[in-house]
Picture 1: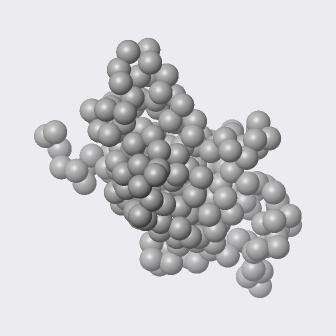
Picture 2: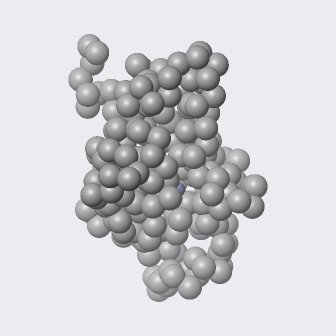
Length: 201
Ligand SMILES: [Zn+2]
C-alpha cells in the first residue's frame, strides 16, 4: 500500500471513533469496530448486548459475522481472507472477543483504550499472545490509538445513563498508560457500575 501503516491505522481508527460517536447518539454503549481488508471495510459492529439482552453481542462479534457474510457472498475463503484482515476497535477486546478473533484467524488488531476489567489483549489476560495453540495462531495488537477519545465517549455514556451515579474511576490524564476502569462495554448494568466506581468528591 502507498500510505504508511501509521496513516492507514489512523484513517481507519478515526472511522471506528465515528462509529462509536454514532452509537452514543443512538443511546448505545459507544464502541466502534470495523474489519478492513485491502483498504475496504468488510464488517462493522457496535454493541447490541443491551438492545438484544444478550451479553455476547459485542461489537467485534457482530463485525466478524458481517465479514463472514461478506466472504460467503463473494465466495471467498474466510480463513485466507481473515489472515489479511485488520480489526479496528475503540476499546480493547474482552476475553471472549479476543478468543473469537484468534479462533477466526484475525492476525492484526488495533484498539484505543484499555479495558481494565475484561480486557483479553493484555489487561486481564493476553489471549492474543499466550501459548494457546488449540485456539489458533497468536495475533498482533497495537494499543492506544485515539484512546483518550474512546474514554471520553464512554464517560459521556455512563454519565448520561445514570445522572446520580458517581463518575466511573477514570483518570483524566495519562490514560494511554493507565487505562480506565471500565465495565465490559456490553454490560450496561448501572448497579454494577455504581459498586465499582469511586466517588470523585
Ligand atoms: Zn467482547
